[in-house]
Length: 635
Image (tube, helix red, strand yellow):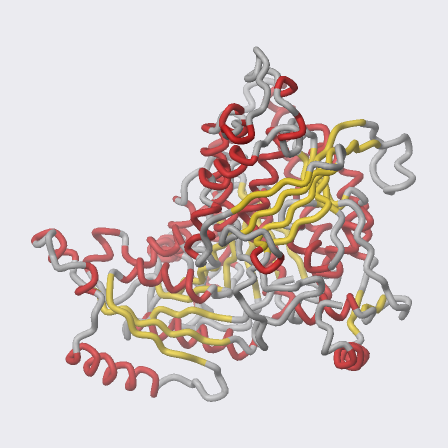
């Protein structure tokens, strides 16, 4: 499911920096991950920025002087000599600039699986004034962030609890020694408000607990201040309903975990405190080794619309805290594209150049039928309008940064039911200049009584959908390599704009007023990629995909998708070979379809399928078949 491949560790040679580096080394050793150590020489202090705002040019500020390089090398060598780095793959990078900006830039450049850093560094009083590097990085990092405190750090919250004698004296005597952070952990705490954000953090909590054979504590906080006053029978009924709702949602989470890993030791906890207090008190009382939580959530209680709870937990937790943001890149793309979507008008998307004039009717804005259909992709977009969309959404700008320009858009509208669009670069319409190849058609999603074909919930609907028949995003200027081998079906390496095109298609579906986007993935890797937003209409196939992702998560995606392509996937229950089956994946745009996927029956079938499906790869057969096809990677 998840893999830890690269760990980024900012270091400033402070005591907490040593603590975080030692912890990162333990993680790297367990997962055989690469360690990337980053030291940033700060360009100016807080006082310097206030007193001398003009400073020096940004270019000059990032250049290391010979004296700085020598001083840094001396301290760095001493720091590294004290670390148990034998057997660890690691690299060291030294940069100059504003620390949190250089760390964020390093995240973009290295794409780490996790960032490990201390919450109190070498900046001292500056941390108290401006919030410090750690806080800024946590808020904006595009990867999971694991934070640790310095040696001997005693939280204010812990002192209050001990002073109030909330725990047994024996528990106080058994307080862990300073810096007794252990990995792998024995207990993992996962706080949840049952929101989509916290559900994403669940993947990491389960992953860590399963790999460490640790106990997983699932915690939900119910604020006592928000409970009904009970002044009437109606208030009593409301309280009972809330309790039942929490119980049902907790059961749902536990069933999901059990379906994925039936042997995992899971302990549910519902605590009548506000979220931060519930998390911290549980972490101390249960001697938790790591807390795994989302950076947003608790929206059902209205208590963490900001990051206040996360901040407090990170500040006062007695153990490392792993914070998970939603897919930051997809989230950023969605936000940016949504603003552009609201701004673009039908006229801009349907405009025709003077050399390819369409015949406009009197009601062009309200009735797209007034435009000559043979000129419009999906009966809506002109070539000029599509170019405008690519420009406004920033897709062309992203491609220019990759070295492409002089874009040419072509349509294939011969088939009235299926339209094609291609984007070339260099002004040349040939395969070696093809960047984007897209084929779409309008279709109808029909469900029948009993759902005999999908094994899904009993629902009936008949609604229009936009079918993605084909989508290819390729970089003809790039080359495959041992570190970037081809995937099945690839002629060239990918273009790196997958999230942008996914959101582009989602907004196109909204523009065309369809109830869903659909696709039929030809390969495992495409199904896994679409799975970030799409779900199989058939809940059995959805469950089998989740189980397959779970059972192959420890292996390289390229190896897994080629193994499945070559028929090396085995049903671990029956021992029989399993052929890849695509089926229809959907991204719902209508409330009716959203209710279908969130229905209790659909989720129940998915969970049961996950729980009863086990897969493995016959790696010996894979090596044999892969070697025989080595000369035909795209076959």
